[in-house]
Amino acid sequence: MRTNFTIGQLASVAATPSATIRYYEKIGLLESPSRSNSNYRIYGDNDLARLTFVRRAREIGFTIDQVRSLLAFSDQGDGDCCTVMALTEQHLAEVEQKIADLIELKEHLSRLLTSCRGGRVADCRIIDALTPPR
Image (cartoon, rainbow, N blue to C red; front, side, top):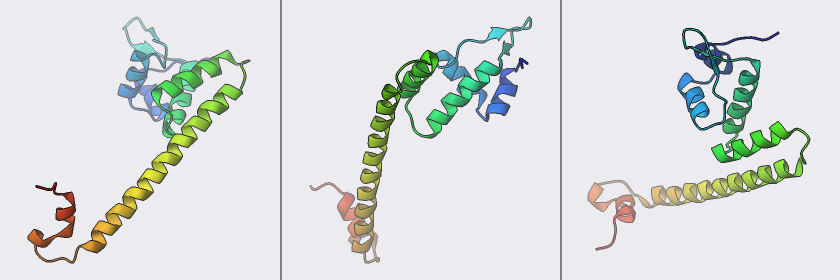
């Protein structure tokens, strides 16, 4: 059974804004849909599946280029999964680095907060730490 969706219906079913769907079409993550006689975009089940794939990949932090690669691997079907694993391992390493950076940032902000004794802004250690030396 083939379902036809307008962009609004597709957006609703996929929980993705219409503007995002149009953007994904523009950058080639989604194919340009067929058009109705009234020139409305018409999407099918395959478009919904692809959009859902893209949305899920974006939700877990894959970049647009990484999603493009994952789609290419997915479209091949019979390719080697090692390339997908390598891409995912690279993404995991990037996430781990971001976590480390955020932990360092948290510690720095905590040190700034503990260095401040309150009082006047002119005596604020946080402002001092942010102000460039003269």
